[in-house]
Image (cartoon, rainbow, N blue to C red):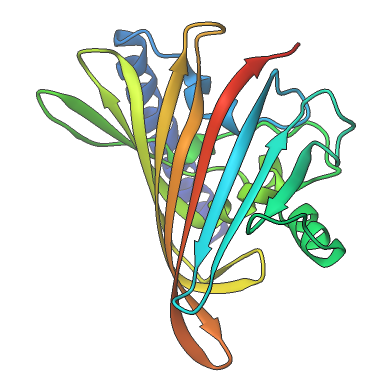
Length: 230
């Protein structure tokens, strides 16, 4: 039994390696580095500041938070909330924002699990690649992505990542929400300066448990005004 288990693990390992090599060869064909999905999730060694506007709607109330990210601030204090619903945020709102966004961890890089790489499909215009992030490499704000399968879409003509879709493969938690269903799309911005990808817009559509009921919650995160500061 032990030998059989070892053999099966070896086969799985070889298969995962083969899948990654196939994906890496395809990315190389279009001049895309393996780290193309990591840059936008960096925290401690981020090089750009940016503004963020988050709109959350649960069908009863609409909350609009405006803030920014400063990579020159100390780790754990880089996400700053400035306005909530056109007013100065309360201490409670700031605490909630900090818990969701800021992290004390170092070496946050959004690393992809090697065994998760897979070519989903390829057409005349796009390549769709499946992947999954390692939990330990994600900042607080994106910790939920460890429980999601992602699909990245690359435009074959431009050779650029255009968007990614995420769907949860198990129940998860985002901020204060216990989520049973999550669908998220991310539109990316490619900056020639540094030749890297950054998030432009995230659209989350979730079914969450609130007071024993399932409620649909929509969250939109818009990123703008990227500036290289280090």
